[in-house]
Length: 334
Image 1 (cartoon, rainbow, N blue to C red):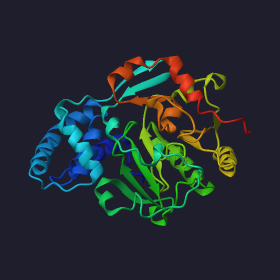
Image 2 (cartoon, one colour):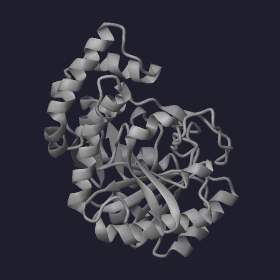
Image 3 (cartoon, rainbow, N blue to C red):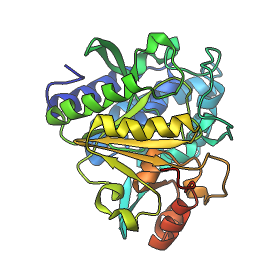
Image 4 (cartoon, rainbow, N blue to C red):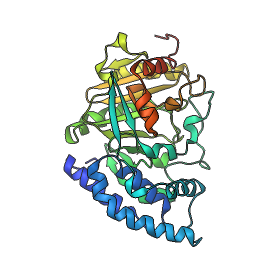
């Protein structure tokens, strides 16, 4: 079994573990639960009372100078103290042509890590001194872990989610692999999506190579449960602003990924039921993008633009999204 036996069980587990994570001396947990609670009205209603009580306790400890937390978390909390936490809005979205624009206020508080750093290769050695998914303080953030198809799998909450029921999937975390997609892992993820999308309707997985939006250099994938199609699935190939390879078999998708890897070309992947989309793109930092597309990853190239202020949310136009994404195009290598 992977996480849960059905969608209802999954959602109940998702909420229950979030509630259990809250503690008067765990600021990082509060931030994670708050960000996840704003995905929709159901999650907000289920978690609002617990979050309010936890926020008041953390605030009291903060003012007393007894709250211990990382510099990143303290910075986020100080910003939250200036906001009306009880009245933060759930995610809002609007369709702009083929594109989906999503307002997610918590994304403005997310540390950028490596997703905004200019790199010169999609291959970097794993560095145990930097952030990775074996850090002991991440243990409370684990939603599920176990064996799946003879591999150890750890599923964590995303601290600053940007897709529905956003998950971090780390396969064989104990091996300390860098964020480099090899053939074995590609086939594993492809198979995982094909099997589990029958159990959890709407389940899919995204992947960012280094220099393509990956914020952590520890091999991981981003899971989600989403009913709505992405633009990349619905638009005709000639109409999409980026070159896309859509494969209906794991083997043919790997041929595309292998070619990109051999040529050190950054890429994003979207694994959906019966399909794998592979998108080569320019390295992050190599092109001037609009602020709302800075650090673009798999969900952006799939057609969802996430913003954290209302003006941008309402101002983005269909043509501007297409033009911005087209800036990421690489020369034809096929």
